[in-house]
Structure formats: structure tokens, C-alpha cells
Image (cartoon, rainbow over all chains, first blue to last red):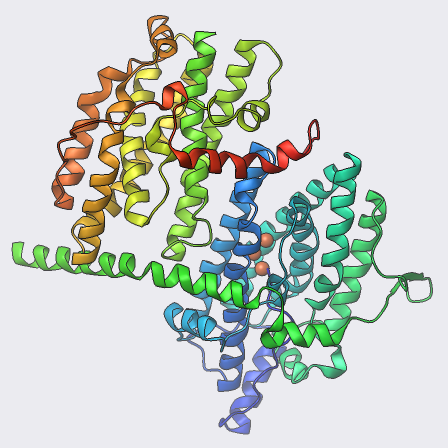
Length: 327
Length: 248
Ligand SMILES: [Fe+2]
Ligand SMILES: [Fe+2]
Ligand SMILES: [Fe+2]
């Protein structure tokens, strides 16, 4: 999944204008910035925050989908969902490693997630209430993630760009798999069709919120564009997503829950209703349905696993001591 | 019919254990285990699918893998008790995995000589998977057994709790006996020495001892389960059963 478009670049810096100018030239020349390269502190901080937020989103995102592994209605679906959730964990691991190249440890990032200091994508603060949600999450949420992440494959920071290339391949597989789940439901019994429609009704707007606030309300977005961390604005990406997704819903005979949705011939895209921004900020600020439960579950996993991690460390230490004694 | 029943026993072992491990998903002690445990679950569920499908074909009544997995109740499930034991903690989970894999690894090696082509096919793939499970779970049993005081205590508790379910692994139900006599499946009782050897090696490093078992628990092969299996199945089968005849 993806960290929603909330991350403003941190422009504060102590560097000289010459240094900043030289850095900007490298970025403008589409050179990849590597971890050992000199970089403005604001660039580094922005990336740590964005990659960390993205990694946390992958990890927290395992919870709503994991919620249905034990109930998946066929063995084939059960295996596919297990593999998908495992992929998301792999994305998290991969992204934590990318962030670690910038000098922040996974433990530190994990603590920031648990303390609420670090954010993750708000989409995971919505509950998965039916099997159809597993299809919808793949179709819409992984779909929106892809829209966000494809431009990140060209991000100026090398490790992040490379991580995204690998991750995007898997996300697009997830998206197709999710769509196929919904298609099966949409072509199924009345109850299955209802399940699919109900699920689309609940996830459509939160999925649109994944792209973040309107461009005008998005702080520091310009600096991220300038540093080529970001390549498109929130609204541009949201529009692309809507234009790609609405025909997919129509093909399935499902109704997108936006009465104002209308094709606009002139702009070659859909006009749509306004997002409920109160809801958006409410969930960002921690008052979504699942915010507390998600963090509680992550903390519980971490705390309950402490003795295991300690044992692993203690055992490794014992082995090392023994080996040294034998030498 | 006996071979159908015997294949179901084997398939149920794999599905139930795969399901149990999948319950960890997203809640593991570390991210690496959140990746490793689904791997093991996928191996087990994958094997169960092939076995269910094959059992359904042999039975010849048109039952699909999903019919067999989702429409039988707890009295019809024929898995051994070990695999249905709850996860409890990471020590229990890894020990359960080691115990099972240490049994299945020699089982699949012996099954390469099966007269049944599907069984031979499963055997080739599954023995590699079980070798990995022995290694992965075995390493954890060693780390935890010879880690901190707490982990060693938990590991000993797991050994104490799970060892009463080991003997059942080596029992053959009447159906399994028929399948064994027909050369379709390996003789379970023959695998004990190999299991003992694997466990002894791991326990030696883990500073653990296999306790004497005053009374071994049995009954899974007759559908006499612990109370937990009914809950596992109720959850697993809930969506499938709520929509009879639906495709997913
Ligand atoms: Fe992602
Ligand atoms: Fe992902
Ligand atoms: Fe994904």
C-alpha cells in the first residue's frame, strides 16, 4: 500500500546556497541520489518520513486483510490471500531497509509507529467487514497505491526508486487479483452482488482520500516536486485513478457511490463529487474506526514477541562466546 | 473408500496445521517471521489441496477440494490432535511445527515409492518443504531452548504440553492400514526411529529432554477432537457455508 499524499518536504536547511544549487542540478539532470551522497538535511528527513510512513502502511495493511485469511471461502482464495499479505510484509521489510540506508533503524521507526509519532496510510483505519472487502481492497487500495507508486519508480532517491520498481510489480498483481475477486462476486448470487456493491460503497471514498488533500491544501508539496521525490500532484493522481477505475466498476455492473460522477468530454476525464474532508482529517488525526485497534494490534505483536527477540539475541551471543572460547 | 479416507486424514493434518499457522499472520514476533510463517502455511495448504482433490476423484462423487474442506464438520475431520493444538505462544507454535515436520519428512521420502502417482508427485515436493520446516522450526527451538531463562522455561512448557500428542502420529487407522497394505501410503509406525533421531539432534542443542509420556492422547483419526477444532472449523467454514452453491 502507500503512504497517503500528506508528506510535505522539510525545506529547513543549514546548507550553503552553492551546495543546494549543485544538489538541485544533479536532481534536475535525473541523476539518482545514493545513500552515501551528500544531500540536504531536509531532503534526507523528507525521505526518512515518507519511506517510513510507506513501510508502516505495508505492515499495518496486513491487519485488515489478515482479518479474512481464516475465513477465505475457498482454499485457492485462502492461499492467494496468505501470499498477498506476505507480499505486503515483504514490501515493509524492503522499505525499512531503504529507510535504514538514510541512518534510521527499523526499531526506531517501529517505536515511532507505536507512539503515534509516525503515520501510516489512513485507508487501513477502515474495517474489513465482508469477504468482498478483500476484493475491493485489492482492486481499489492496491490500485490507488500503484497510481501513487509508479511515479516513485523514478524518484530521485535511488534505493526508494529501486524498491518501488519491485513493489509495483507485486501491487499490480494484487490489484488484478482483487478485481477478479470482485468480478466473481458481481457475476455470482444476489447475495454476492450485494456484498460487492456494499463493499464498493464503503471503500470508494476512502480510496480517493489515499491521494491526500487538494493540491492547494497540501503543504510543501512544491519542494517534493522540485526534488523529484514526487512527480505528480495529489489531484492529478486522484483524477487518473478515477478515470481508470470507473469503467472497471461499470463493466462489473457496480455503481460508484458518487451521484455527481459524470464523464466530462472536454477534459477527457470524470467530474466527481467532493470528498468529505472532515472525515479525512478526522481519520488522519486518529479518530477513525480502527486507528486504536490497529496500533494496539501492532504493539501487542511487538510486546508479546519481545521475549522471542531477546532469546534470539541471547542465543547468538552464547554461540559467539562459545566459538571464541573454542578458538 | 479406505484410500479416500486415508488421504483425507493426511489432507486434514495439512489444512488444520496450515490454518493454525496462518492465524499468526500480522502478529508475529518480528517481521521476518511474518514472512516465514505464511510460507509454511502455504506449503501445508498447498499439499492439502492436492490431497483433497485426489481424494475427491477417487471417491468419484464429484466432491471438490472445497466441498471436502468446508462442508465436513468436526466429527468428520480426521486430523491428528497435534496439528489442532492452539498456537499458545511462539515456543508452542515452533515445537508443534518441528514435531509434525519431523514426522512428515521421512513420510514423504517413503511415499516416493507409492503405487499412486499423485502421492508420488506430492512426495517429491513436500519432502523438500518439510526439510525446510524442520530446519526453520528446529533453529527456533534451539534458540529458545538455549536463549534466555524465560524462553527456556516457555520451551520446556511447550515440550511438556505437546509431547502427549506425539504417539498418535505413528498410529494407523484401519483406513490407513489398508492404504499402507495397498502400497499407496507409507507405514506410519516405521517412521518412529527417524523422528526420534531428528528430535534428539535438535533437543541436544536446545538443552531440552523429551519427557516420559505417562498417557498419550489419541482420537483425532476417529473424529474425537479437542474442543478447539470446532471453533477453528466454524470460523474457516463460515462464509462458504453461508452461501450454499456459490462460487468464489
Ligand atoms: Fe505499497
Ligand atoms: Fe504493498
Ligand atoms: Fe499490495
